[in-house]
Length: 465
Image (cartoon, rainbow, N blue to C red; front, top):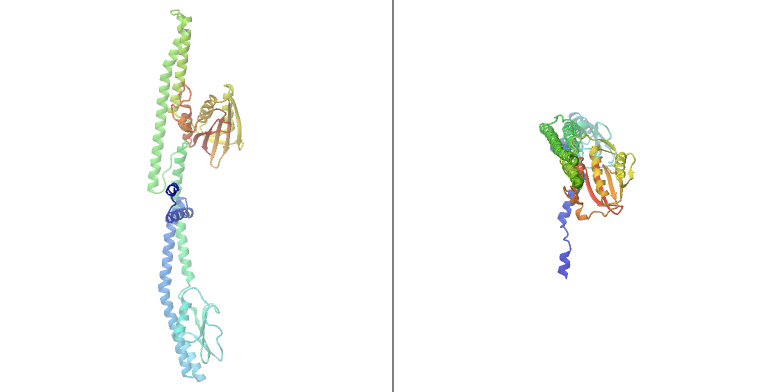
């Protein structure tokens, strides 16, 4: 029992695979979806990494070396001055030492006898110079000290606690600071931003050509033929545009040739059928046969000819399609009114349901869409007594519904009924729904069968908006 129950449960994915899926989803959410965004990201990340490496190499090596040397010289000068002050304690000698050391080192030194240092360390600034100077003062002077970087704008004030008092040393900031860190950061960030904007400008031009090509392919796939694309952008994009224009011309030429051939076939087939019908209509008047005895047979033959013409029209319509018609904007309410009026004249109980919103319209071939709805409604009329047409707008689609109160369609046959020559009635061609699906697919939409709210079947037609 335990083995059976264990085998019946689904195995849980390993934690590594679960984390991998979470990571992939997170990356997909963070990364931009557009080609322009990804191209800019591909260019910006290496640029940012290069600037960061340059900043680290410059301020991590060169600036630190220079900073240590400058701070070491300053700390050595202060230490030597303090040693001389302790060796020559007379006031005159101390003043001479302070003046001479300051003059030779370019510093301003004053001794405040009897004062005590109230702070230690440094008020930090950007860069390694403050830490280097504090460390060198501790290593060379070995007395409590405080470095004030903010008292004067272009000067540094160093106070050292000596046994005599507080020695104050004022030095120009450029004696210790090579260059402001923000200057290099601003230069690196500004150059990166300028390069990024230039790259974005060039990449947008390339992506614009790709977008135009994608838009033209989408419209051509929906049957909305457009003018040829002007090749522009990179060489590969130009080649793709030229290839698309050639493909478009070949398809249009093929459709035109096929339509011409099929029109000729239709004419050739209808001509002998028309002659047969005329011959049968004139046969009883010849007086050579018993007209009264052959009249039922003649009527049957005329009915067969009409049925053959109907079948030929269905075959040609299925093969020809509706490619020659130009797409236009069609109000759904007007389209439904025409279909319902035709069906009511044929004795069907058809009505229009809800249309949300009012004034809803679609872009497509008017005659082709009328043919779709006529085929669908005609198919519903053979199996139901009540038909209702409704429509609603989706986010990017328009939904058309045809509901009936018939017996419905089994779920296993809801896909097969759209195949050619799948007829549910005896003597039918089985091309009505196949033609409808072919036309809807040519519009870039899809058609499906499902259970309807009236108890029968519902045909759901989705068209791009």
